[in-house]
Length: 471
Image 1: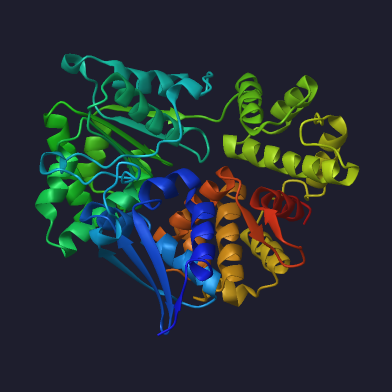
Image 2: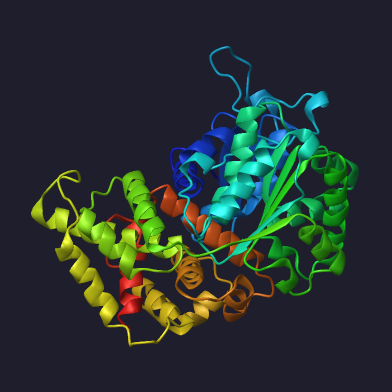
């Protein structure tokens, strides 16, 4: 058996993994707590870890990501094996473990989480002030006067995830020892099924039912999953009876989520159900200023006003617009040989952006077929490959971008996108959309046909967005 050292394939897998999950998450869960070794006959990636806690966490939350990364780097399917091997991690005062072994008395506490959003950075306007107020009340209320569960619903990209994660971070800041868990309904389902399979239901229930705050995103994922809904209801009841807080979010009102049990609907309706609406013009102005500042983009005040008046969709639509403007600005800077800090976006670039939008036939919404055709053409892959099971890195990237763009540019749900990709379950589609969003946030660069070296993924998304809107 030939072992390829970490200086070759493993080094590339590690770098791709960092680009995919983000440097901070990599350092927390891999870093000095995991050792990777690649074997080429048959293709296998061994992951040695410090302790069982880390092995379980990587297995639950990163296994598919690592598998895809390894497959993309080697060009063929790769088997994974996780094993606990503390001998590879000698104790040292100079080299502390990335995650300390969990002592028995702390086993019921949820693992540390990386929460991106804070309530303090949420831009409040008339469209979302009730939702924001309800979120603040949920976390700031005294224990004796806790409101019922908070259920946020509304279209994509309106700030529901921001509010859920913000509530979690605020409670942790107020009570550092509080048991707080933010989880997607998909992750809850996967953890529940793993507990059933491994005969660890008691451990799963203790961990969930001793929380001080449970925040569950994308609750619609529980639809048509009777066993998971039943377990969720029991956990919901146990948490509520203990006086803990519950916050939920979904695209639709609980009564409009198909194949939700009446018992689950009644639990969701027992507290405060709040709709988050698209932001008005004044709020969009403040959102654009905030997003531009976070990205280091300089915009004229008149450009901000024009953008706010022109784009009236979700915050994600505004983010997509800024992505395209950022891409156009980067191209202009490269052509003129100017630094990234000396260009302020003015009306010339904005006019160019509007010109591309104007070429979209009036009243014609973006179609899934448009997205698939543009992406497949750009990455030189066939639609049949995207709809198939091939794991070639170029096809995987094209498929992920089709999912991400379909979610942001159309009204299609995850199940509808999954059906167009010939997937029986939409869980992989949800994962691909979130992974692409994380890669955009971490400024990942990718290899693209016809380009020398790697290209910022954000620029590619902007280019694709513009090409799709021109059709």
